[in-house]
Amino acid sequence: MLASYWVAIQHLNQDNDRYLTDKLAAIQADMAADSGPQSLSQELKIIHVADKMYAVRVLDSADNIVAESLEMPQVFPVEIFPKTLYIPVQRPVPETVHAANHKTFALVTAAADLGNQRLTLQLAQERTRDERFATRYAALLAVMLGCVVLTCAGVAILVPRRPLPPLTPRAQSLRRTAPTPQAAPVPAPGWPHGP
Image 1: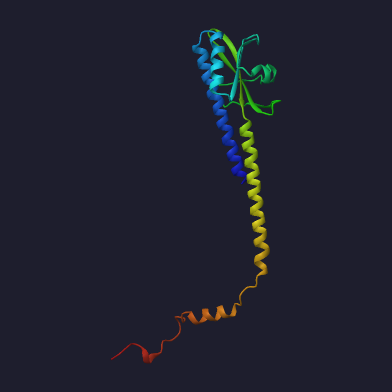
Image 2 (image 1 turned 135 degrees about the vertical axis):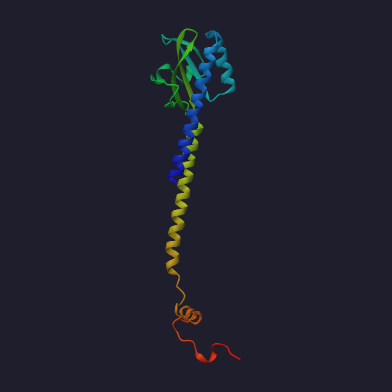
């Protein structure tokens, strides 16, 4: 059961990290094709309406905010994001933060290019539902394990208390149906069958 829990949580984390990787790649591609920060701000507003599971902030080389999603200023100050930049060929290693609004977020920082400028992307993905799922799944497995232990204990207590049926009648019935040994002599008058 522990292996089942571990596999499920690892799969969930890999899916979340893949989601982050895809979002980072999409945003970086949009920024590379885009012409300026004004259109980027408008695009982030559109993205927020379509997908409320993540928020984005773009910083310039002097750490000034170029564009950000609507909830970024209230929930995520610039300082809480990791300083290590995400490397595109590797799986992101997000930093998990529990916000004041009782939600859990994974934070990743990456580099992006906008024209000839080098910008910093800060991406926050909400993982509150995933954390609740992990907690509920662990509780379900604990209840199942408890039921298995109680069932095994009940069987271990009840089975030895029942009397076993007498073995003598069973042994006698086996002797009656057992074949005769092959080394035993065959009676001569009945063999071979003659005229």
